[in-house]
Image (cartoon, rainbow over all chains, first blue to last red; front, side, top):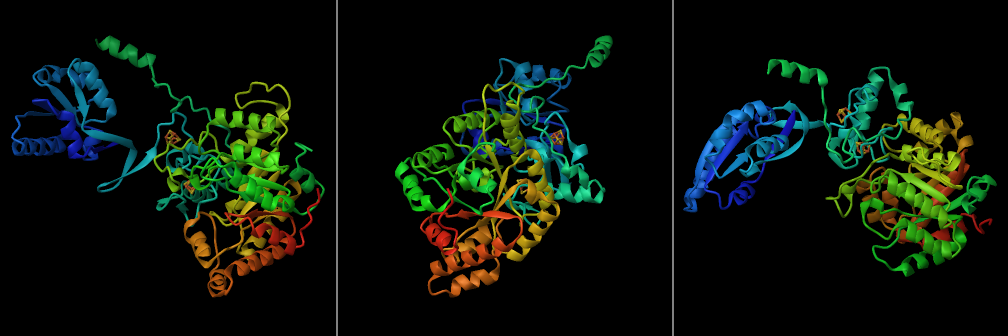
Length: 228
Length: 304
Ligand code: SF4
Ligand code: SF4
């Protein structure tokens, strides 16, 4: 899932400077699960802002709402009218949600309450670990199901660098060396010969080569067209 | 001959080679490089100029190589994958060859988190093995990575590094073999202190006959003080310093002399190991030690 982290309170307050009526809008999917931008976090942030406004003797009207997904037009449509009653929307979704919201609520300003961080798995309670960088050309089949793009600090494709030591990455003793993990997993799978293969220079176009990526599924377009 | 550099000639002639590494300054002062060059000129076959080593900004390797080249030294340009994408790297390779720099060493590069710009965005567009492959294709097929033709020759003597002490241990030979297959002509190893472990690694190298396909230069660093030895043990990725050597440095009345003695012992040991074709001296700010070590190791005068 997409993991986000709430911005520091002072930064949020600075973004809202000058606005009187603020709608705080949560998102019910990824950022709810990682406890950064769901319903609970919306009410927490609202009460923090309310308290702060009272202390500073400023006037602030705070609305609260949470929709299922801010990255989906269908879920935003029903709140467009409500949003119109406010001066600004403080979105607690990931960056994608913030942008779709901004587009659909034009000309209303929309500002982000979160920093969107990475694609992660929930490790244990309160811990999320980056696992994928959305590189657009998955090589997990060659690497024992462990991603060198996201998990090796240097995104190496041909084995560990010279800094790998006792299973740890040269960057920090807290970070496992992805290539040690890959080596161990391939060894368990009896697929160590994979390590001999020289992975060729990569075409980064499906990934972060600069242009925004898009996927158009003709079959899916047909389906929703029929429904409409 | 692939590039006809001095280093290549020495290695091809079967002479035990001596290379050294100099770090360019954190300034634009050419004189610093010149001084280091003057000190070691007579004593080495080629000089590596590091590429923002430990991710700390310094004068570029290219500039350092040109300065030394003008003084008549053969140079090794170091290229890390950390700071440049494939466009910048290939452009640097063409530039280096145009300037008469024929030896190029391929490295991943220390991670930017360890240097003085930890907030930098690392590039890592290609990795060190892919870089070796790319250089080989530029030279042998006259092709850029994209497949376009290069007009004219790109004579390069391709170097790579290997750290016999990094983990996973069992993969280290495979990794060297990959570098050989990718097209490396010579290897400079990480600094060696643990001679037994190094000898064991070399036995595997010779068993696979990798030493027949590539020239291996053993990395030597003269210890200057016990503090330096401890620092390397604790803070430099991929270096192991046995406790016994640290104790020797701590107990020495003249640590610099002891450091030189230790280096000479290690050189003697590595020369006895089959498959070693030379040494690579890391001077790290102590260039004065190089003439002493090279002479006392009876590796002087240099052949060419
Ligand atoms: S290889 Fe690419 S798609 Fe696959 S897990 Fe890694 S970043 Fe994600
Ligand atoms: S130590 Fe391992 S994870 Fe870290 S950069 Fe090197 S290969 Fe990648």
